[in-house]
Length: 85
Image (tube, rainbow, N blue to C red; front, top):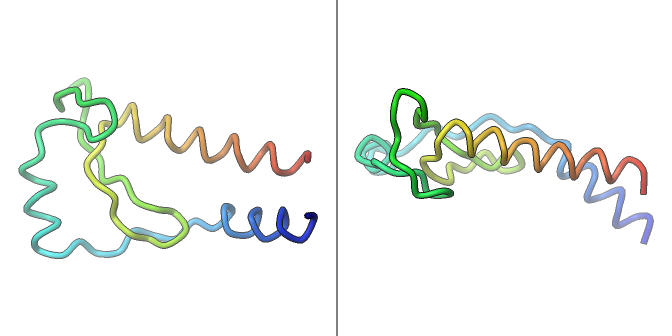
């Protein structure tokens, strides 16, 4: 069990930069009007960001800045909790 926890820690602690978007991904991102997480429309108060997997670098989709920060916080919380288990 301990080895598995260590493997998970190593995987989750990676922070791979996002891969370059394909032309199709870029076009879909630019055309997106709502966040794929909360379904709210993007606006000046809710700007669009590019959500990606920090382990693989793979682009996931357009999310608002608020959701992107919450997703990052969830990841950091998981890492924190793994340190003390």
